[in-house]
Structure formats: C-alpha cells, structure tokens
Length: 488
Image 1 (cartoon, rainbow, N blue to C red):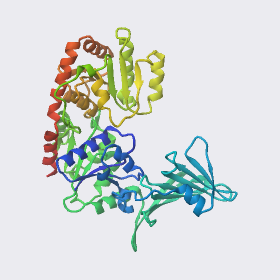
Image 2: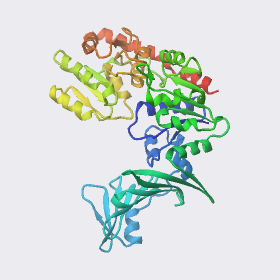
Image 3: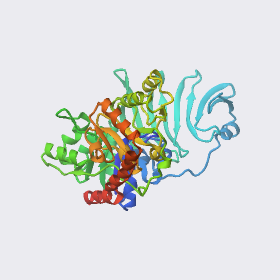
Image 4: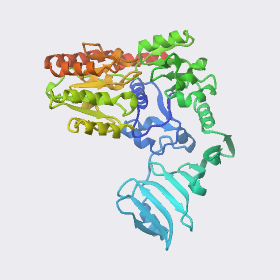
C-alpha cells in the first residue's frame, strides 16, 4: 500500500491537499494501491472527502485507533425525541440558530449545536454543573457517533480528552496541564485491550501509529515535511519514504526552515519529488546527488477538449485562482484591472480562493471604485467551468512550486499571463505561445500583455488552442508512468 501522508483535510484546501487528491485519483486510475492518511483528529474528514469523491480512500490516525476506517452511518438518532421522551428533559430552541438549550426540570444542564435546521446532524453538546459552569463537551463525528469528549477545568481549560470507538469504548486519552500559563498536552494513553501505550506528545503517537500501520512493502509519500519530518526520522528504517516538495527550497542560499527536516536527514528518504525539471537539477546539484531527485508534476490532465467553443468565453472575463495571502500578490491583479477598466468597460476579474487578505483586498477594490469589475468568490471545490469561460488567467505569485491552477487553465483552453518566478510558470507557459511570462513585480508589463490579448481576438483564440496543445504533455499516462517508476 502507498500511503499519501498529510496533516488534515478540511473544507477549504490548499494546493498541497489538492495535489494529494489529484495523486490519489491518478493512482486509482493506474490501479496503484493507495490511501490518503491524515495525522490530525478530524470528525468531518469523510464529509469533506465526499466533496472530492475520495471518501472510500481516506482515514486519519484517530480513525485507525477508533476502528472507524470506512465506517458508514447506520442509523439516524432522533436526539430531540430521545431527550424529551426517554430523558424527560425540557427543550428550548435558540432563535436564529440550530441550537437547543436542555433543562432537567428547572436546571439548565446541556446546550446542543446541530449542523442542520432539521436537528439531525449533532455537532456538539456542552454540559453544565449546578453553577452553570461548562464542565464537559462531547463532539460528534459527521457519521453520527460520539468521537471525543473534553473534560474542562478552571477557566474552561481542557483537562482530559477521551476518544471513543463507535460502541463507546475509550481508546485514546490525552491529558493536559497548565505549563507556564499555556494549556499543554502532557500525556497520551492508547488503550489496546489489556495493554496501554504511553506517549509524551502527539508526535510520539504519530511515530507509533505509522510504525504500526506500515507492513511489508508499504511505503509513505510525505507532502508535509514541515509538520511531519521529525516523525519520519524516528520510523523504522525499512519503511520507504518519498518526500514531495511543493515550494521552492531556498531562501537566499539557505534551505527553508520547513524543509530542514528533509535536507538534514537525506538518507532517511527514498527520493525527493519536485514538480519541475529546473528544481530537480537545482536540488540534485545542491545535495550532490546523495539521493535520487525526480521530476513528477503534482497535477495531470484528463480528457482535455479537442476544440474550444469561443462563444462560451465571456467578454472581458479574467480569472484568478489563488489563496488570498501576501505571497500571491492579489493587489497587483487589482491594479491591472484599475489601469485597463477605462479602455475595457466590460472587464471583470473573478478571484477564487480564501485567505486572511480578503478584507484588505475588498477595501482596495472599493477605493479604486472597481466593485463592478473585481469579484471575490471564495473557495470552490470545482472551478473548471469558471476557468473555461474566462478569456485568460492571471498569476502574480512571488514563488510557485508548480502551479496547479495554471495547468488546469491551460488544459481548458484559457491562456495564462504570469510572473516568471521559480519554478512552475516557466515549465507550463511558453512565452508568446500559450500565454506570457512577465518579470516578477512588473505590473506595467502585465498590463501591456493583458491589453495585447484582450485587444486581439485572433491572437487570444490562437493562444487558447495552443494552451490545450501544451497541456498534453501532462497527460495521465505520462505522469502515471513516472510514479510507477519511482514506486517500484
């Protein structure tokens, strides 16, 4: 089995999780045994995994111990009826919410939060003592069972966490204490029948879990070396680990801090995988070929269109798919629209992505009076339809390990104008053929190139056809064979 190893899969994902999902689906097509495994507790993993149609091929470290890998909801509990009829409690519904206050006669004892207006999907229940102090919280898995209970102490500080199997057996206990004013995990106990395993940290638990999980011929593909690199160094040496780097590896001439667990322990790894040939050459030279460095794109193209319906392309429609963070330099894209809006009154930049920069960028849009011309759509699981309707895509990142959004855009016949940064854009964009490469930070040049394409329908249509052609090199068969070679 090939375990694609990450930390957590949430409702909004980064490029790293997108790459893991792409790889899992590719492996399934190629009949390569594989699962995505996440280290953090996540009671809604299977809910989120369904959005990507991978719910049968994912689990967490906690699912392993809780014996809930591939567990399916068997029945729907009617909680309101249970509390009212079986427990004789009084329910009071909280206005404008999915919440319920629960009373035992006149005593307020519980507060329940549901995820739906029908009060079927229970999220958590808080318990209160006679002085109305919250003393416990129960958290439920998206599949309906009680997954974790938290015992609370003074100031509602977590004292103990219990994790359960579906029949209510406690299998993991995590103890916390106040260490220098910070609530700190101090002990983890794993109950295995008549025996207990004791650990001092989550990292030690992860180390034990992976050693237990991996049998003969199993191997790990690590996408989060910053969080899990130290765990890898302690694994049994016979467990092969392939590490995938999703970003540039240097800051100046120094290895980035989050990649040091890899570069300080190179012999622990079977190989390093990067997405571009240029980065492969750079790393191979840097480590003097101490271990193999392989170029395998983190994305691949399935069934690209043979032709393009240009009537489907919306006039003046420009798209951007990026997290709303400083490194992506979304301000530069807004500036491009500001400079072109007078010449192209129908121009519109549609931005798909999430991040903490949203409020700042919205204020900038309002300041420039571009509310009609710049739209923020948040994170979307599927953006292919929006990309296909766009005339072109903008990418303004300071660095880009590959550029999954760029590849998807090209595969759908939407040319890309991007800053020429390490490493991805130059591997994907052929300047003057399927888009343009612009020096990083050169907004004037980006405005010029956008203007050229919007002003020349014949050129932009040719670029669109060229985009589909150029994306063919990243087809499923080619990328799959590269993985087959390194996994064997």
